[in-house]
Image (cartoon, rainbow, N blue to C red; front, side, top):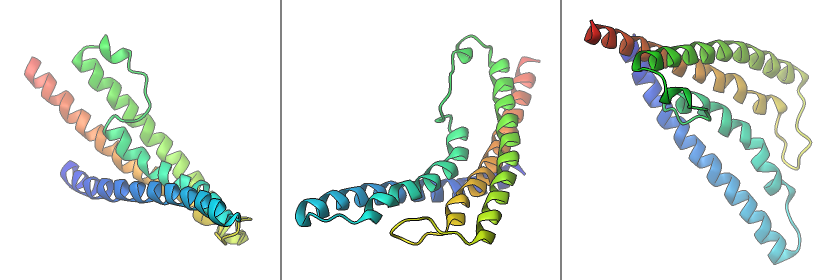
Length: 169
């Protein structure tokens, strides 16, 4: 099961990192175009300024899983300097369980919010017509990805713990 999950997550990671790169490029381009059009014509287009906040949720939430597994998320790691290898693995197992649990809870909440805004049919009050549900869809998508990656982390750490126990015993 771990190998199938690793294969799926590796593909997902590549797609997510590519998507994050594209989103960041679009954000920078939009803000640059806003400044350029204001400088050249004296008139700005609001949607250039409104685009980065709309894209932010699609940048942040899908990255949760890959950053967790790669240990590139925000963390306080003073414990890892004083823990034994076995306790470090146990700590990472605990982190994976917490991430999985949070992923399930927030994925469900994200689905509820997305469905609510989809049914309401509301659009953001921007120069560009973007349905609000589209922005909220990033929440369940990101947390579903987190569930997959935290499961991978959990299984890998269980495997590492077994190896460590066999090596010590």
